[in-house]
Length: 157
Ligand SMILES: [Zn+2]
Image (cartoon, rainbow, N blue to C red; front, side, top):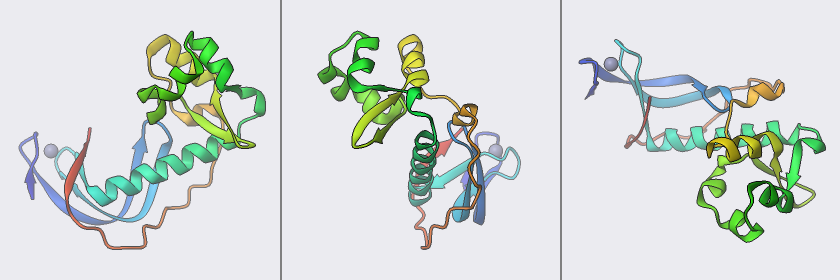
C-alpha cells in the first residue's frame, strides 16, 4: 500500500495487465504485478514489470517497423543530411540512440523511419503512435514466465 496523490491508496494487484501505450497502442501482459489506486486508477509498476513493459514495447515497435515498405525509410546518411548533422553526430546523439527516431535494421543496415525523422526535425521527438502506420498486429498477451519482485521504480502518468 502506498498513498496516491488523489488521497487514495495504491493496492497490490496481480494478473493480466492492459496498458494503453502512447507509442505502440494497446499492450497486454498475461500476468504482471502492479499497484493500482482504486479511486483514480493511477498505476505504479514494480521494476521488473516496468522492464517487461519496455521490452514488449520494443518488440512491438520492431515488428511494426519491419512491416513497413522499404521506401518508408531513410539510410543513416540521408537521415543525417535531413537533420543537417554528420553521420557521426547522428550515431552519437543520445536522444536518437534512446529511440526518439524510430529505427530498425534492414539487411544489416540501420535505417530510420522517414516520418519519424521529419517529426524529430520539427519537434525534437520523432515518436508517435505507431498504429497510425496502419499495421494490425496480433494482440496476444505477452507472457513474463516468472515471478516479479516488488521494487517501486516507474510511475506511469
Ligand atoms: Zn488515486
